[in-house]
Amino acid sequence: MLIFIENILSKDEVKQFRTHLETATWESGLKTAGSLARAAKQNMQLDDTTDLALSLRNHILRKLGNHPLFISVALPSKIYPPKFNCYQDGGSYGSHIDSALMPVPGTNVTVRGDLSATLFLSEPNEYEGGELEIESSHGNQSIKLPAGNMVLYSSGSEHRVKPVIAGARYASFFWVESYIRDEKQREILFDLDQSIQNLTSKVGNDDKHLLKLTGIYHNLLRSWATT
Ligand code: NI
Image 1 (tube, rainbow, N blue to C red):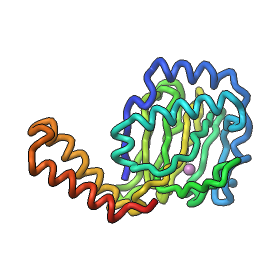
Image 2 (image 1 turned 90 degrees about the vertical axis):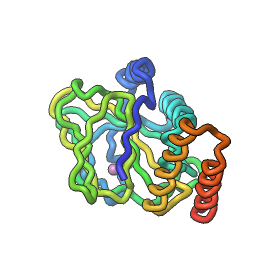
Image 3 (image 1 turned 60 degrees about the horizontal axis):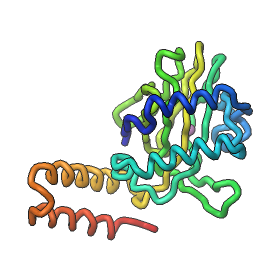
Image 4 (image 1 turned 60 degrees about the vertical axis):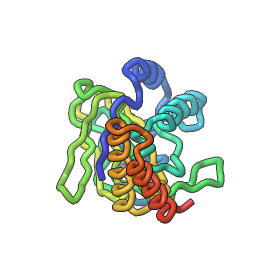
């Protein structure tokens, strides 16, 4: 499953993020690479313990919480606090699969990575290279989105970031644990929810068949969800 979500951040918000990020202190991304990924990772990351990182990630979490498409597609139960990275000077991240279980520092919460997210904070014309390549059953997808837009993909997919050979690529990234662990079940619920929403705008809220479909959605969610 590969889902693109536009305008998680507005262009004005991206501008504010960038002003902060471009003057922040960055550290080597190796510090937080899991054992699966360590050898492959060449980038810079923002220190998560700073007030700046805290304020930027809370801003993103607020936007996600109010985003109907994100909620519908991810059915999130937990979100790993968003992190920030920067690739430049040939920086890249070789092929890897994200770790399955991620303890959130300073808490007793562990997030199971069902979905991985990259929120682009640089425009495609600001850097060369830096495509996020994701392997899927439909072949290799090469992704480079406008700033403020996000891609969500299955955390079980092999992926990589191609070397950034000019400019700088800023992004935020995080993982989502979904109430629906099974990807196929999540897709069925997403399709059903989208159809219900489309029908609602055509036939109105009180159509009895629509009420029945909405009930079916919730009954499927009830039998499949894990909390
Ligand atoms: Ni990754």
